[in-house]
Image 1 (cartoon, rainbow, N blue to C red):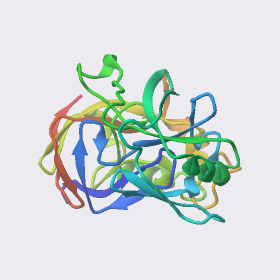
Image 2: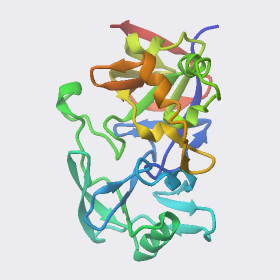
Image 3: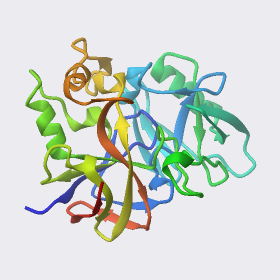
Length: 269
């Protein structure tokens, strides 16, 4: 069978549980609504599931530009996007500083209770700018609060190959991709340079380096004591930059992606 897009997932709040979609618009910063909200500490530094694995139990569903949030043991809350003129603050994500809009204090209290630490919610509105690293991008390329690039793609064959090596299989959710491609060989995506999905062209820019976040059990919100799948990946996916699994993309045209869209490789490395 020909390669096709088999899953689309967004993470409206960075490090929250993924939200599967049947279709989604592609914007310059990535999929619509993907990682436009961020949790930060009192100093404005980003907080993720690497240090707070319970974040994967938080469900975030877009309501316009706002969010409907749900977490175990808490009442749901609907957060409105900050209005024009609302307070702003500089937040730090990796080496970038972004001028983000502050959510209502009630949202801060809710996320603090959900995580058990003092935390704040911020939103990336149109005024909040964050450029992609110029070493792997074109001038003007921008990104959301994703780690470094607008989208992440993984072939289903890559996960299948990993699970054949594991005593207990892990779900694709451990790797938090935006796009999953079916009917391709394991790690075929490593060699792609340009790919068309449906009617949208993407540049395949960089392997995704994996970390301890892959060992967070998405059902329990706790680290897997076996350290899998990271320990197994170390045995066959180690690179000079670290363990890689999946590829980062930048959209070169816009439009709407839909499950079942054909995937055509336009250029190889």
